[in-house]
Length: 501
Image (cartoon, rainbow, N blue to C red; front, side, top):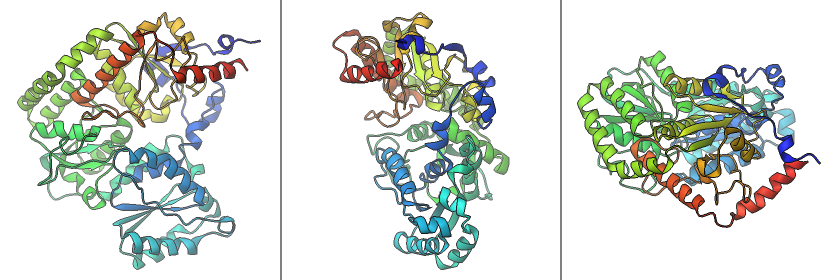
C-alpha cells in the first residue's frame, strides 16, 4: 500500500515575491496545465454571477433581481446571505424571474419585464440591480430592450450587469465588477480636505456616526473593521464621508467630495481607490488593512501627513497603543520565536502575517501558484515591504495538506507553531496535529467575532488586541496536551483514508 506520506507532493518553499512573479496569468489555461494545477474551485463556486452579487449586496437601499433559473438565487442566498446575517442583514431582498425550461429555450423577456414592475411596486427601492445568469446569457435575452421598456414604468433606477458565469475571467471581479461602483459617483463642485472615504468595506454593515447618533463602537457590540477605521479617522479630527462598497445609492454619488480615500480590504478597496484617483483625482493612502502597532502607526502618520495633522496622529498613536499595550506585550512574550503557518494569500492572511512579524514570529503562508488571481492585492502588499516564506503546492486543496510533513520539512515541532486556517476547513489529525497539541487560531470570516472588539479580519490597535487574545488562548490550550478534539479524531481518520487511496 502506498502510504499517505509517499503520496504527499513535495512542498516548494519560496517567498511571496518569487511565487507571485513566477505565477502564470489565471486565465492562461495551457500555462496551468504544465503545473498539473486545477483551478476550477474559484471558476465555479465564485463565478461572475456570485462575485457580482457579492459586490451589489453591499447596497442597503437596492434590490437585486436575478434573471435566471431558481437554483441560481437559491445557491447565492444560501451561500452569501449566511455571511451577511452575522453582521446585521438578516434578510437580503433577492427576487428572481424563476426561468423554467421553456424560458431557457425560448427566452424570458416578458417575464423579466413583469418582474421589474412587480419589484418596483412591492419593494420601492432606489435601485434595481438586474443580474443575468448563464441561461439568459446563452439564449441572448434582449436585456437592453427590456430595461429600456421598463424604465419609464418604474420609479427605481434600473441597472443591468451582465453576469453569466461562463463569461467570467478568473480575475474579472476586480477588473470588471468593482469599478462599476464608480458609475454611481459624480464630480462635485467642492472637495473637502477634512473629509475621508473608506474604501473596500466587504460583507459588513457600517453603522455610521451621523448627526445625533451614537459614535462608532458604542451603540452595538459587534464592531466591524470599517467602523474601527472610521473611529481612528475621527480621532484625527477628520470626518468619515462615505463608505464604499456600502452606504446608500444616493450617498455614493457625492463620494468625490472627500479629499482623501483610505482602504480597508485591499482586494476590494485598491481597484476603487485607483479608479477614483483616475476619474476624480482623489488621492488615497496606499496602505491597506493596517493591523498591529507598527503598521497602524505607519498608516496614521500617512493620514496625518496627507491632511496636515501630524501632531494629532502622534497623539492618537500614543493613546491607542497604551490602551492595548498590556495585551500586546503579553502576547509578544508568549509567541516570541514561534512560527505562524497561515492558509491563503489574500488580504486577511497577509495583514495577520505582517502582524505576526511585528510580534517577532517567523511567517509561512501555505498557498498555491494561483497568486495572480488577486494580482493588484498581492502587488500592493509587496509594495509595502511585506514578504515572507511561501509554500507552494500543486493544487488548491488545502484541507488535506500533510501539515505534519510540512512541519518536518521546515524543522518545526508542535510547540513551535501557531496554525491560522482562515476560511478553509481546518486541518486536524488526532495526536499529531490537533488543537490539543498545536495552537490553532480561528480566523475564518464565518465564525470569528469577538464581542466589543473588531475581529472579522482585524484592523488597527483593537483588532490586533482581539487577535492577540485568541492567539494566547490557542497557545495555552495546546499546552494542556489533553485528549484530542472530536474534530481531530473524526476528520483525521477521513483524511488518512483519503490520502491512502
